[in-house]
Length: 190
Image 1: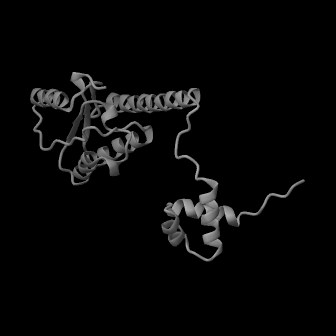
Image 2: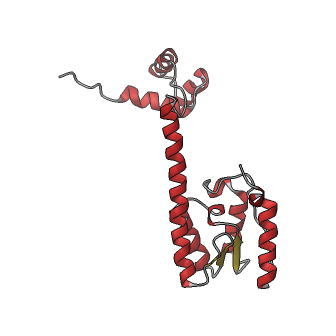
Image 3: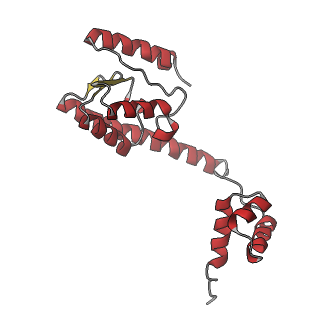
């Protein structure tokens, strides 16, 4: 649950005030409200638009609320920093008081990325531990054996992957997996 200071409106208001104090001219605002920084560029239209602006050299400085608003994977954050630096764009992170126009700021950005990735790993570990404690499985339920047998019969009868998937209301990926299992050699008993 977000605290009031974490709402997009409050973050934007504070960043606007920082821009005014520094004399920066705000040329664009990008947000991905309600979308995790852990998601990829394809799932974050605001982040994608930001990166397109960087590629066009539309701005000289990016101001963000926090490092975790940009991403949670160290490799993605380091890649992001490399991309913006190649285009001559600096980064200001409000919560961390970080400015990558300095060597110390660039080093600190790398450290913050490490901690953001650690936090994501810890969250995942806690979720998996909770699922183990409650004996719940993650992912889909296994396909009933009768349905898998019907798919195998259709494949043996010459039906293609997509046609078998449509017939049995299964995904082509699932039907492909069953087809691969059918072609795998049987293990020999010792």
